[in-house]
Length: 441
Length: 177
Image (cartoon, one colour):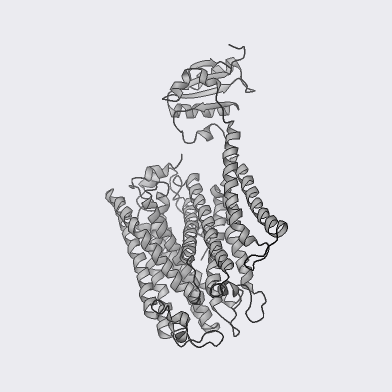
């Protein structure tokens, strides 16, 4: 992932500094530089993917495959967050977020590529059952030599849900739901640019009404199948909500990065004002608290009830089974507590931080990075050493996580930029566009 | 009528007129003055040169006080005053003190915010000199008013009146203290 700071330097065309002329611009400010940038991102993405593939020959293949799962989940989470924020925008008939929504609509173009990039995980599972998710092979041995998955009563009870056919059908289904909703939202919004028909707005509102429950269920299912089932003995009803909190925080942070980039490049001059940043920042603060509430509740209930079927998930993220010594994941957990909650929470309390571009941009980058750590915390301890203890956080795996994130991220950025010139810069004929452009002004 | 009036009041017909007038009163360096409008005027705080409200700082103090109260309440009662092992848990852990601290953080923040807002706004106030003049009735209905208080260091009966005239104010009159 090349830093958007670099991309701002490639900006060439600055648009007139008032909203009306910007709105009247046919497409984006600079189609040529957008196209060149898209090609660069695709190149970076392909290099990332190639580097990750190379990792298969350097590190144990399972570590690289789980790193790929982290990378795909990270960008899928952000795309789901964008989808939900667009749906929520429509269901509330919001006005302030109209210009932000257009960028999310472009971001939704990444779902089909994310689906494609997720596919290798399913192919691997069909070719080598049990390689990623133990329960996809009934002959997988249980830790501590207690027989196999097929004999495990805790598996047998869940067998109707946890099997390769269901995993495949569900994952394909989730991506189809996201792609279908995205296509509906994009078509309605983009067509309205040319015909100005208010009917598209009401159609999107309808899409939002049935889309929000669909996305809520599908993202919960995805979190359960892809991440939680890595330790299929474990259960937490908070898990989907935890994933949703990360989705929303990731999408808002990317929203900050994109809008500030467009602002610096000139496209959003006269469109984006302080109050938009303030509103996005307030939502970032709200979802920071929400993430903490959900994550803490999950931890606290398990800590308080102290039932072994639940506590083992946190135990192996704190101490080694073999010698009882603290492991690296304990400090990763502390990093999440302070870096995913307290830090961003205290920073986002400040009005000045929320509306000062270079500060809020840094906060957004930080949140994106820590979401990645959170996904690592949930996924990577599934890699066990010979004693059944999780492999340490600081290892070669982290390198493959980075290459996977760059690989998938490059493709997502390319999909966004490829979609960018296909519609007007902002939804100029949205019924709420004037309200948005003068948000609290 | 006392010798020293409360201040001068001027009427403006439009929100835009008031907005630009406010900018000039601000630039003339007045501090003790106010705008009275029948509806919210976006950006007027900037035109008047008002900074951000100080209420959030009071809220933050309330929040910190609430969090500390929650933590110390659970610590003192569970680990000091009446140590009792419950459910095999330690006598004190921030884990189980957290829900209480969290609730108290919200409660105390809310109190601090409401009280801070009232105090900084000088509320409750049942009487204000501008209520003496009937012009306020239009200011609550369809006119926009600017009041410059005589207590302002820059106030001068003649110059201030001239300023209000220059910036488009009509019906300028003195308000009884």
